[in-house]
Structures are given as C-alpha cells and as structure tokens.
Image 1 (cartoon, one colour):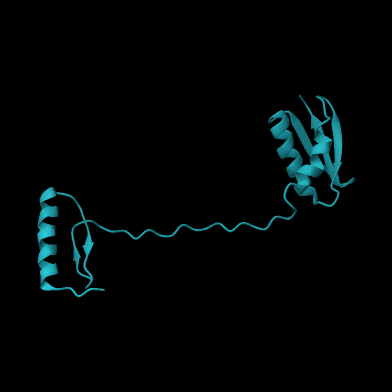
Image 2: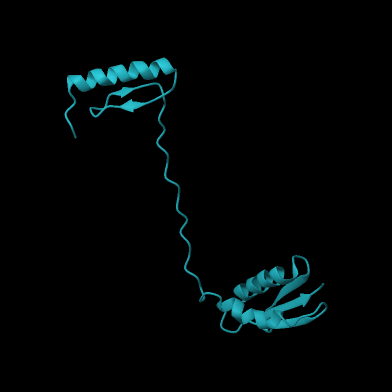
Length: 125
C-alpha cells in the first residue's frame, strides 16, 4: 500500500468537492479508514448454498427401468410396475413424473401396491 501524503489528501478533497457539486451519493474509504460521502454501504450477506444430497441411483437408472412399462400403454390400460432394485417411493415418483411428461397431468393414476411391492398405473386418457 502506498503512503498517504498531503498531496494525495489535497487531490481527494478536490475530488470530493467536485463529486459533491454533482449532487450524487457516494462513499469513499481512505486507506487509513476515514470515510467520506453520504452513501450508506450495506455489506451483502452471502447467499446460502443449498447442498444437494447424493443421488440414490445412477443417472437415468429409474427412467430406463420404468419407461418400457409406460411406452406401450393405450388409454384404459393398467400396468403393474414392480420395484425391482429400487425403493417403492422412488419407483412411484419416477412413474408419475414420466407419465405426466408423456400424457400430461390428470391423464393417469398411480397407486402403491404394498402387497405386491410395486406401483399400479392406470392410463385414463
């Protein structure tokens, strides 16, 4: 850091007079900590970074498992999707997500079948 000399102080005072004449708000903090200007400086708080959980399954593993059950379905068809190597909640979530993408919302119904350990899917429209 350079030394704060009397010459630098005079240049600063001259600059402050010019800035004041413009009628703008500003804030200058000198190297020695002195503050000039009327602008209130607010130090932004850092945004919280959301930590994501690690995925349970490999990328597109659920989609690749579920899609063969969904693609051949016509309106009125019902299919049972067993859980396979996945958990029941994840399979139902994947079935609902991909059915909604293919046929649109409200055109299918899913239900967990605990007795058979899978998901029932009915294509309505």
